[in-house]
Length: 329
Image (cartoon, rainbow, N blue to C red):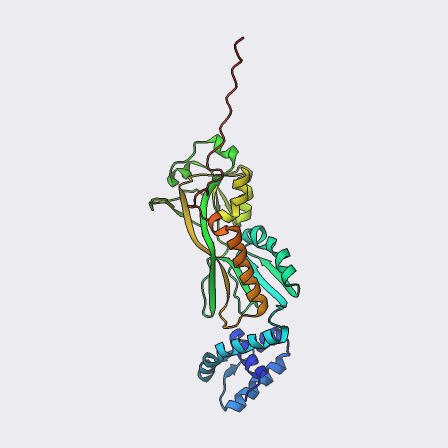
């Protein structure tokens, strides 16, 4: 019967196309990983991996074998980890990728309560505006939106990602408030260029009756990060389309005003992404369950919904006060 070390060495080498990278993930030497794979091949009587000086690739027999054992090995590894660490006490490094604004404003504040319950978990948070490769980059999970679901990755939806037009009170006072998305063309605009595609992000807005219209934004100021766009809007530099989680606190505090309160753009869902395993590691399962429950208790799905009742905390520009007439004596 094959040892778990031989199977793990084969699976990681196949996933990462490298003995060296597999060794780093498994805490072994490249020579030990290569030896484990060679022993597995010898016992099975077939070559599973083709070696070159730079990488390893699966043979036809290797592809069949990997497909046969992948899920079973995940379940076995998880069961061993749970038994070794104790199912009631999750432990270990929890590597998480988070959208910067969402992560800092809504996920980071959950850590004190989570760590009070699970003190042996060691969080490693990465705040980044990109889609990570959970398997190849060694992440336990990611929290954000817009991920392409590769094989073996599942998504648990948390809340909608609605994008709204916002401006500073000063900016609104200087110009006429738009009544339709096309009217945004009359305002100086702050837009985002994708670091991945190099293209300006364009939005189609929808009103409460389901009518659609393009948000006509010029390229007056271009940035590559939503947090920087939000700061530029605060400074009164122009109008921008930003996700509700990125501007929720500013809207409530009156630092920003939502334009076109009947209109929004739909950017999908905020979700938890993690590897599809029958038994998740205890640290990952504990954090997933904790975040889902926190979103439920705080009602964040409704707060992030641009169409929900009360979703326009400051949708009207402040009116200038008229001077009082002196009283007649």
